[in-house]
Image 1: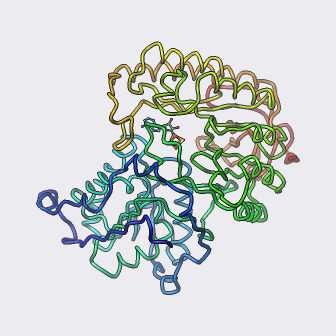
Image 2: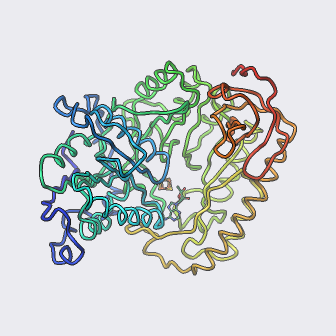
Image 3: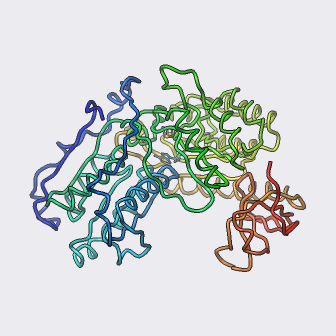
Length: 511
Ligand code: 5AD
Ligand code: SF4
């Protein structure tokens, strides 16, 4: 690893469990962290990234977990879910076994999310519960990792008010878990390792994947700096994995029999832009992935600004590239988009939607929308509603704006009152429910290809699965069909699920 641009901090853990009063009198930990700085972050260069292929688990750590159990709670996005798979892979390579029961665990990790304030509140709530457990079981190792660990204010708060935590590590330090654990086991130090700037790319980390679907990271970080968003600070600068590494991982997953792959990145459309020695875009990658024998390929998340014609042409070739595109719009008002620094207008977004629909007429679109951004007027919110009506998304993740420390929007006047934000969110959700229901109604009587995931959670006589467009389908059938593709005729479309009838008991042949 290059040492440039990284900071490693270690705290002496003065008491095994420090209470709030004791901690308050303690030193100011803020000197160990740099707050997210827009100015510094924007000075990012391309030259620092290097790729590492060496093994993550040193020989003397390969049995450290034998006879011990771990429990990981994951908050937030698919990127975090996938990071958890990596940590599980490393822990199991060290001999740990997983448990779903916190009381039984010798190690508990909270893989946290910082995107909105309520995500952080959940983690602090959980830490409160874990304090009792730690008091009853002092040998328990308790770790906090993920996006919240990249925030100075959060690390300070944990060290002051939740000093029973043993390890805090950031999103760029995941591969260092074995070494951090070793320190936590063999010394009395509280181990805090947060590299405040971007990390390198670490290949060959073990991953524990379950089921028939797999996530594959194609890039890390984000350079878009939307003014409301903490991600460019918590995840660092954009860095793409080399195409040969991504393709080798997908080929290997195909050999193992995985049925569906989701390519992951905060802004997948920027894939390859950081290569200095290679002209290879996200469209090129998708064109190569298309040729691998995996039945379904998805990707998330797209940024409309970088979504180019080359990608649309490749997606229009279909095959294993499914006709579902998640295309976050955030707002329907050009004025608000400008203040969000999204770098596209309402018109540009709608043109892109038109282009996609011309090339792939049955493409299903989903989106992310924020209501109540600083300065959003009722009129501007109405523009969001009208855009939603025009695009007719099949579904949307909708959020009320939540200021994040260190982002440019946090210093704008958060002047939309809470009750107005709530009311706008409700009106948007009501509209989305209505449109989603109407979109599902279009599928009545149609026969769709379904990847069977298993018994439905609420009724073991019913199977559940997903269409190529990721819609949930429920139907009766034998559970031996799990993991297979079948055809189902939709007989009862509802708002959130499609109920249907199995066409044949034979698995469907997939293109
Ligand atoms: N407040 C509300 N929503 C946010 N998102 C990101 N940052 C914020 C914030 N500060 C939403 C965006 C993004 C999704 C993952 O989370 O819609 O696309
Ligand atoms: Fe955040 Fe996405 Fe914007 Fe990047 S592109 S700053 S992850 S909202």
